[in-house]
Length: 292
Image 1: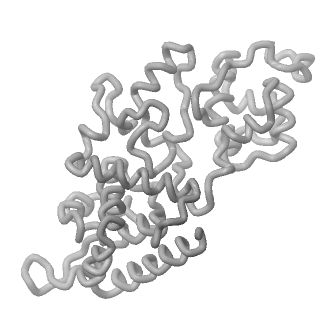
Image 2: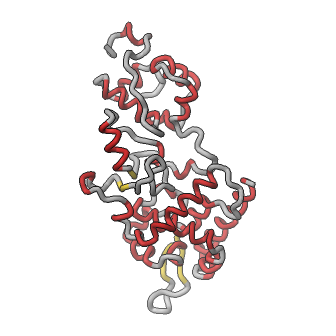
Image 3: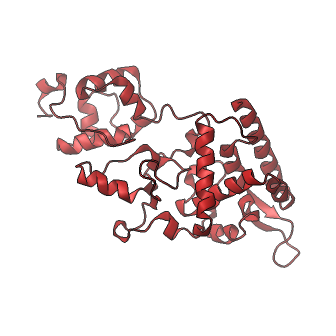
């Protein structure tokens, strides 16, 4: 059917129902699978001007909206809502653009039972989530074997601060949804806590020791992070391995509960690390003020 040129000007005979919070690219990819074609071929057949369905999650033009609305017989507003275009300002850097780093196993099982196997909700790409907003279950690292049933709460080395991590997740959600009661932007604080820094003294009491600002709150973070230090950068929070995310969110939660922690972190750093941390803390204040 889909290869028939005559049908290129007709709506699809069968339109699949999206799952809760599903990404547009995921929904379109499921249609491609259903009709037995590849994603790039399906995008070309739809005449979207791109063969990469993932690009539509971040950039969706009016012509593309009109074309998709016609072919899939759906409301243009609903189409746009399936993208990440309306992501609140300042949170775009917290959206993972490649493979989704997390999965809700409960929802994935439910999708499979409902005939929507492989569906990817938007929150599976959000780097501030550790729980599923749909069912409330703990998320899992997509690198973990699916049949283990283990979640991030089981596999993260920072599972002991899980409650604080969930509180940090809630703080960021509140900020992104317009809560203007914060003195600091929690998003900017996430960057500040991932600043690579230097301690005044190392283990031998003489040489400075490298680490991260978050290591002042959770000393074990430095030891665990050093082997993968290239993956931890304050400029790309979304690249932080998901197993370290509970520590970062717990750090945000603990900082909001006791802002003097920021002074302790500052005093515990020297050289460029201190300057970068101070700059990002000031940015956090300014962004919170702007939100108000």
